[in-house]
Amino acid sequence: MAGRGRRGCSCERRRQRRPAPGRKWRRKRSGHRLRRFYIAARAANQRRPPARRRSAPGGSRRGCSSRPAALPAATAARPRCAPRAAAAMGVLPVPAEVRAILLDIEGTTTPIAFVQETLFPYIKDNVKEYLRAHWEEEECQRDVGLLRKQAQEDSSLDGAVPIPLESGSGEEELERVIQAVVDNVHWQMSLDRKTTALKQLQGHMWRAAYATGHVKGEIFEDVVPAIRKWREAGMKVYIYSSGSVEAQKLLFGYSTEGDILELFDGHFDTKIGPKVESESYRRIAASIGCATNNILFLTDVPREANAAEEADTHVAVVIRPGNAGLTDDEKSYYSLISSFTELFLPSST
Image 1 (cartoon, one colour):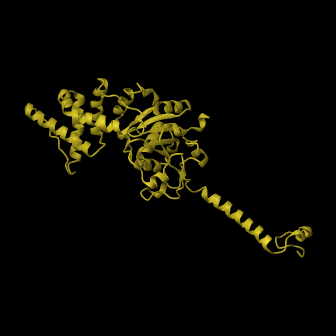
Image 2 (cartoon, rainbow, N blue to C red):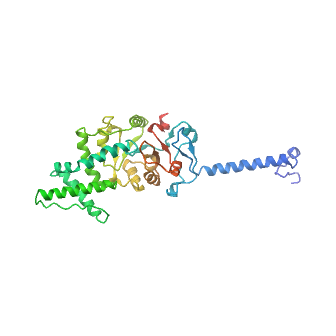
Image 3 (spheres, rainbow, N blue to C red):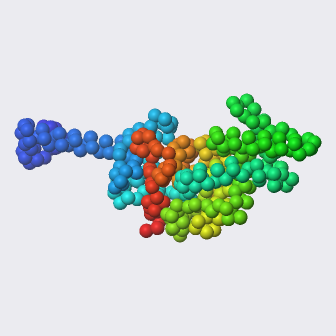
């Protein structure tokens, strides 16, 4: 059309008002291009993992455009952390789809020092006396049977301690078998192993210690108030620990806060699977009747956090006194909290 301008406008009046080519026009054109680029960049950023929340004082954040090299890239595309505005408030918003909170124990609800300086030394110092006192009991024999089976599976490992069968030929032989069990338990504990056989014996020994008042489960002071608040907001709360379910219930049933077992909707241990395998979190989700992305897992161990993320579970890493340090990449990638009070449930407002 004869009267059509260079931008496709056929209106003569608009064509006459259009500036002649020059600096002003170029600015207008570049501004238009800039806006289009900004819109495209914003759309691309929505597909990127947002910046991860740091544990530095003041709730500051640091961007992270990629997952740490030690963590699989397959889960890097899933956003898991709080918006910037929320981080400035010192809180970590819980995603709206979360319906259940899954808690680790050691370093998360309970100080590592309590586990390392009270619970484990109690086992090492008292296992022989416990075995002698309870050897004839059916429960103790089941525990020894599981340990013997585990010893057979471990026979190819360096330093493994076999447990012989008892033939009933006298006290001297019984002492040799008991000593073998003791040595096996000490060997496994020296390697920080999480076998079901070891955890079962430990759980039974701790039960006796709790019942007699020799041990009380230590809980961080923010744990009970926070869990009560979560439950009031409609959240289910579960425990997932390498310690046996029985040991978990003893810790919370005989805690420094009293019997708080009523705060938990269920318990899981290594019988459902190792905590560093993603399939374990899928099994837990199926067991409690929800999808994996309906769960928020709180742990102090990045390997566990990684496994949970691979199962599409939401994760926050807990920073507590005595916990192992994190690498810079882990600090950048994961959502971090130092107290349960930092979790913000949108449904509670």
